[in-house]
Length: 158
Image (cartoon, rainbow, N blue to C red; front, side):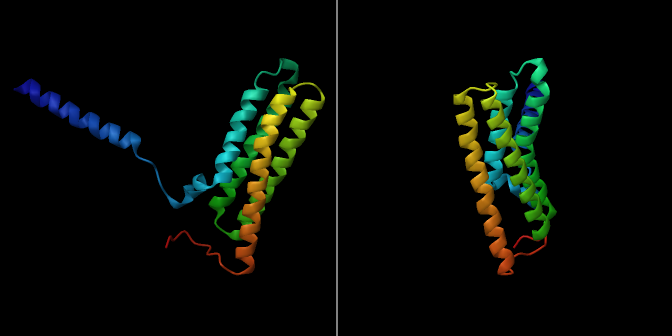
């Protein structure tokens, strides 16, 4: 009988642990994760890591700069979102757009130097194009909200 109770208690503890592990942490400050452009920017970073990781030692700085430019896009989107004021948000989205341009320049230069293949460049460029246009659409949408005075600088969700 004692063994059965111990087994039952262990099972309940395990169930609680698994339930907590699968629980999504949610708060308003993590809402950027729902943005398609942020998700695509993270995918761009992952792809950049895959392509530039194989660079030889003497080109590690070039690879690191390229990867960092790609990573900077998603980081600036999330940081701007978390600032909450529309002015700051737009400012960080413009930083993300600048990082996007920097990343495109890195890819183009590496292709021209024969450091990445045409196929790798096309894969990077296709996803970069999607991210860049998503950023432009988000910026335009927020600028319209600012013009129409439809933005609340608040953490309250309604």
